[in-house]
Image (cartoon, rainbow, N blue to C red):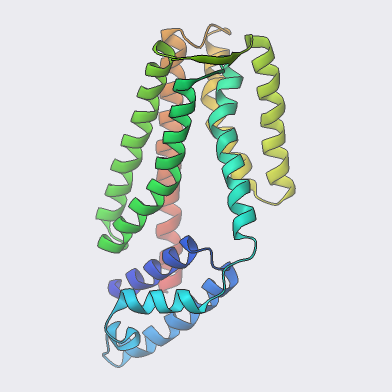
Length: 257
């Protein structure tokens, strides 16, 4: 069983290599090789520094520079961007309240920036500082709770201050387009054997679907609709975070054994 210091090092290594677009196969091989070296080193009373040569950051950086970048990294990054845009747009189409205006554009750009780049940076900093500890999961919970709360709050602002309207359509057209796009964004990931992505976008749209049903198809601008969709979204988010933490802990126990 590896020490917490060693597990933290391997976790930092994986995060760094993933963020630099390295191949999953190469990351797995490097991690397994280093795990064996660390087990042997710690069995003889040596620390992580005996493997890294003193500087953990420099060692991880040197490994990253030696490994080739995944050729499909750019392609998958573009597909991920399209997927994220779908995540932000389809729920509004399902609700029948989609309207292209300056507030929506600024909101989506902000969520993209915080939800992708910001999350990667913050998660890496949290893991680097605390490793696999209770403080890490508490920090995750605080960050994602604030992120979700800000998204919900921003929806109230957008509805009251739409800014300059660029394009709009009626609720029926929005609902039809949203249903078609949701079907595509679920079917395509399933065909690509990416069930998690299909489930994720379904869960993101689920609050709007439930709010639509519960309120009898009332306007998404109504207070009851907004509160129901916000509460369902919060429950789904908290449940998902709890499941991820549980499965991560379970996987770590299997790996350490």
